[in-house]
Amino acid sequence: MPRIRILLITVLAVLALAVAGAVQASAQKTATGTLAASVGPGFTISFTQNGKKVKTLKAGTYKITVKDKSTMHNFHLFGHGINKKTVVSTKSTVVWNVKFVVKGTYRYHCDAHPTILFGSFKVK
Image (cartoon, rainbow, N blue to C red):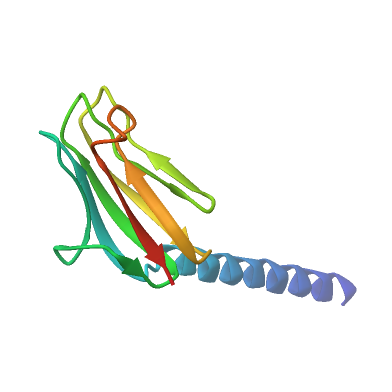
């Protein structure tokens, strides 16, 4: 009888951990919104939501699709614990899941041309 009880407790513990892990993974994948970022091919940089320039965002997790269309630029997003960037010498499309937790100003620019290609937005 004690072996069955131990086996049952072990099985229940494993199931509880599996469910907790699945819930956490699901919560991490759930995005507050979808954003788009791009740089290049000329001297352009953008950060948009539904086709409009982002000026403010609610705190939360966002899925950001970044299109780096030039080998002379990159897209660098930073501020309050966020530091994500593409590579200057490579064209690429990447998807980032970014969690904006801290209210304040966040910035983006091209590391090769930070005084020409830049922008910012606030998280409320």
